[in-house]
Image 1: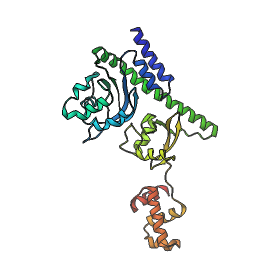
Image 2: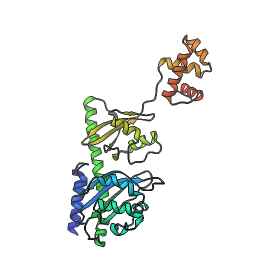
Image 3: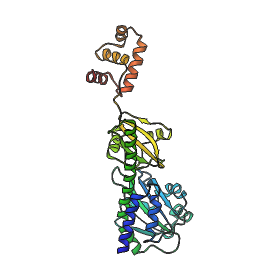
Image 4: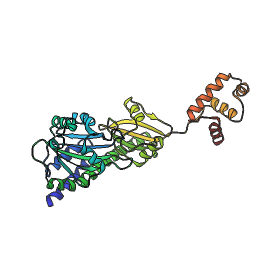
Length: 330
């Protein structure tokens, strides 16, 4: 018992000392002192919507197996009974013999997948995805004929909660390091902005850690946002080396020790140019476009172009919404 308690203490110490990139491999090294396995995947993802009904992997660390296991898995995920058992929620670690489980002709694809990646026996446990949040799991493999036993399952059950907590602590520490660096930059440039929200993501956009304000801002911009990966428009902007500006959020990106650092704040309210504002005020007051043009001494084409630009800037779609903006900002 003392040795096991020491192992848990080492795991939590690792969470505070290791980088986000180094933590998974070091954690697997610690776990191998208590459970014998020759391969593993520590992953995060979400359930796919029907008709696929499989598991979409957003981010994963592959231990002692070819990284192609992640590329091959989506093809078999929807047909895998182990995947469905995990998504339904596991009360205890699930153990199985892949060669027996996938022996039927209906599961030939799964059998080929397990042979390709030397998956004879496996044991999986983790947290199935709650609403709008990611699932997290650890699956251990043995390529030998030795199955995982009841004692292995008990140890994984005892270790999992601490591993899950340690992953969260490790990523929060990385986020705190990012916040500290940003605060130092702000102090150096005398540009402090307390409304900035921060997050760390993988190069593929999987969110490693995010503060509550960042999540709230993304949900304001994208109502269906789930706390698993950056929305595609934001990730596209990051990959193109530029920031993302939406109706509700302004995000800047940089690289922070191998992770994508995201710094966000509420988007500044859209503002019309003086010329656009004059056109909007007269048009919303009841003038026709022709009357506005005559009153301002410009062409109707100019009036139409400025109204079109104003509608786009403000995100409004008709004269009533434009009038509301003019009234509120006059």
